[in-house]
Amino acid sequence: MSPARPPEGANSLSDGQVRRSTAAPVPPAPPLHTLADWRRAYAGGASPLALLGALRSHLSADDPAWILRVDRSFIDAQVALLPPAPTASTPLWGVPFAVKDNIDVAGLTTTAACPAFAYTAERSATVVQRLQAAGAVLVGKTNLDQFATGLVGTRSPYGEVPNSFDGAYVSGGSSSGSASVVARGLVPLALGTDTAGSGRVPAGLNNLVGLKPTPGRVPMAGVVPACRTLDVVSVFALTVADAAQAMAIIEGAGDEPQFNQPVPQAGWLGGHRVGLRLGVPQRADCDAALGWDQAFDAAGVRAQALGAELVPVDFTPLFEVARLLYDGPWVAERYTVVQALMTARPEAMDATVREIIAATGRFNAGDVYRAQYRLAELRRQLAPLWQQVDALMVPTTPTCPTRAAVSRSPLLRNSELGRYTNFVNLLGLAALALPSAVPESGLPFGVTFVAPGGSDAALADWGLRWEAAGPATLGARLRPARDGDRNPGGWPAAAATLPLAVVGAHLEGMPLHGQLVERGARLLARTRTAPAYRLFALPGTVPPKPGLMRVAEGEPGHAIELELVEMPMAAVGSFLALIPAPLGLGTVQLEDGRWVKGFICEPAALAGATDISAHGGWRAYLASR
Image (spheres, rainbow, N blue to C red):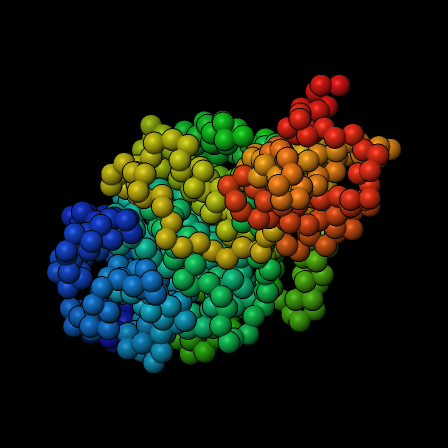
């Protein structure tokens, strides 16, 4: 019988059948968990060689979460390339990370959890290069459902990865090992991949943050494809801040073919509207035996406490999109990766994975086009959804089966896990899986927020608010979250914005405020101008509007109340087109000395206007009437 994983320090693998491990890994966890922990240790004088050497001693050879643990010389070689101390360009200086073993690392074997497929990578994947350039140190490659085909974490000859809370249950997949090593505190960051939910389901089942970027937002060079047109590298972390930092480093597709070209959206959800609108399933159908039905209800209450409005949504068209992924011709994309292996040595593949990919034979070229047409129709049908809600809030997965149950019904149990994940990448959406609760059953329950493509920064912004809404324990009961864990060192890219001061009919609750809402603007602050302005009630304007004028130096002026909003730059042009004479956009000084764009008035229109400056603002003037 061939060894389950390479000899210590080796980079090649046997391609024989490998015994499945059933033992739940319980290596002692090191004391450093989040990026803040590692930075604090280094600031206190610890050295990367010492800390990483100690970490490596905790990585058990019997742990099925790992396919390959790198040897000490590989770690030392990476440390030797670090600058003497952290710099602005090395925000992850000395921080360990792991990658799913369908992601290439130069000089190491990539298996995709199939020994017969294994090869030694000549070049690291772009995402790995970027993390290492930022100072991160790779310590190992993690287990997965073979060829990233599965959501259970059991379809691997290197062993089934147990749930980090209860080893009788699945860890979720296909990025099972990456989720496990983060949940147990072995590394603060790990990369997975996500096609149908592989970066979200394991996060939900292990009490983690799973950041799934919009397809096309991160480079995929050096990643073994599952469905090449849909795949995206995902990030597992214990906190939103750490996941956001990692995405800020790896994002930006390189010089490679792109099947999706998302445009970054505003860095917030909901805009200037009072309350965020979250679409929720009309019936979530969460597992009551696990207490997850009540956990999802509690998640809704938590969202409402944060000011969100829950909007019931008919998920029927979303579920139809989801069925296209495995019941449609996209399965043929998986076949393109393993065609040679399936032809020459089909017995070398996991039987369930082989069965799924063999369904390619049911489809022809006409089926591919028909499926594309239907997907386009469903996209059009779903377009109005994003006018009704800002994001979806769904159970990351509605249940968690035991490993024994998966063994008895591998396809059925797997499909249950993907109920709320399979449609996301086909529609080019962004998603963020977040811990929510640990019910009395002892298995963690998570929710996922799904938003239009390009909303990665906005989801992370909401995720920080979600985390701060209540006490939480990190990962597999590692420790309570602390305030310092929520300070992001980097942030995903968002659309450019323009700060804008409004003083009259665009104030919140006023007749033209809807123009800001329609353009996704958000309130930054309620403040005042510098004491160098006068405000006039303009006669004959509909709706009534004021005009703001800056006084000449030495003349008496007033500080005028205003609202400072932030508007996506892409929406500014359409907003300008709505501004009637004698008003326009100019530059206004705030009471703190800053200059921002804001409403001003043509001097000629003020000749017969009433000076209302003494009221201090438009609201006060209207109230006085």
